[in-house]
Length: 229
Image 1 (tube, rainbow, N blue to C red):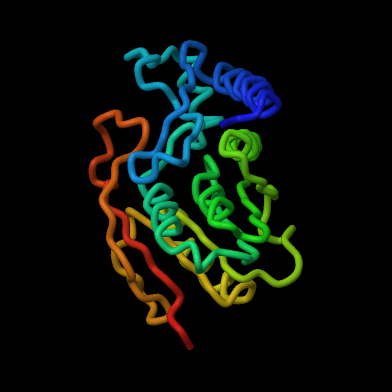
Image 2 (image 1 turned 120 degrees about the horizontal axis):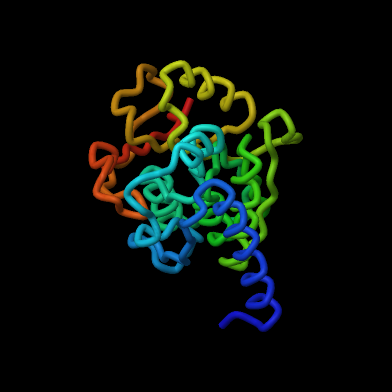
């Protein structure tokens, strides 16, 4: 059960996140959404019922300039969070960096599994606020940074979901190896890893939240892990 302090601060934080969303989509609202694959983890996500069919030209421009990716739980993030929850022993007492954190779903899952320190990285300042507010909702502590370079000292694990939407980002995987011995990557766009360094460990089906009956082609996620040397 949430303490009165947590409830009060969660409501205040949710109001702050709603203000951010309203600056982009004036009529849209957020709703606390448990994840179907792991309902113990909840996120402030876009309420599909609050969306109207036509965006104004001003809203369209705002969306292009400041897309609220953090207001969705993408399939790869949910699948990776679920994978973490199924293998908590891999994350317990570890120092974890989650890259491209978005809503913070993967970072939160790692923290819920007892990671010693979890750092969420996202260059979107709105996502940074969403991560902190979603962490509060789930009563875990997450540190946030805007760039990988800001993370110092040795890491145990790097996680990343949906970072391979651009094929050029494959080089990120090489840079990850310089920072941590264990790397787990989830992606719904990239089905074939063109490197023997990573092995496929799972395929998981789940839909994007909120479910807008779109993007069905991204509902299957592949989980990759850095192979043992």
